[in-house]
Image (cartoon, rainbow, N blue to C red; front, side):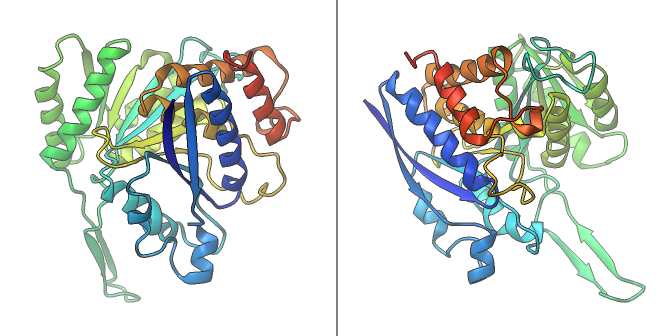
Length: 355
């Protein structure tokens, strides 16, 4: 029996509803794979911020440092600025735990039509590998002359050789295990220092992976090609900002951002990695029991892969695909009438190990 201790951070809004769904699927798939999970739940959220002035306690990161993984629901609430919720919880966690890879798989599933007629199930299957701890999202900068006609804001980007190289190595290595194709997102024709540096490092690392065919695309053209021909892409490596934008665009191409998973990984496993759906807290539907749990369930599948149980992770993904392709069970965002519990039950029933 292999056991894992998981930190649960349901967060805000529908995060409170989709995390229990993901745990139910994890417990169900565990039976057939000799696994067990222990969950410790933390109330870190915008609600906590409104009550205490902090998203998490001062020693919060130490409280989860020794967990095997973190499963997070959603963060965000009206009245709490997004930069407060992000910089009060997610970004400190990513940086303290060196979660430098943000992994965003994108698939068009049978039974979930893409808004693009040319994006078909079985053809669109890509992964965005986003740098997650530096780049454009640095803390360096500030504002001067506030409230005057001379007011100015300065935000610095930080690209380090170590930070970019380790991200690129992860992307190239992943490409060797997939279809052997890698695309680098750049903008070196307009951003004169950081992006040429990025391009140089891509060329350096590519020489170490002769089996991977690679190219680079300027971010504006790449965004257009994600829409015009998403099936051409396999692994896409991108800076923090570019990867953030591209991954949400690709999720929309796949039919719904509500199904999209994400992982913030510390590949060396020196610290826990975080797994979360990307749909946000959706306060307009929170508490109604109608949230789509698919993104959280798929994130749990990614967690199983990371913890060294790829067969269990594959079983969860197979069950998701089976429900979408072979049943009429759909939540409202996918055009159906099923509630969160009904969709979760359908996934559990479809697990290959359920019988």
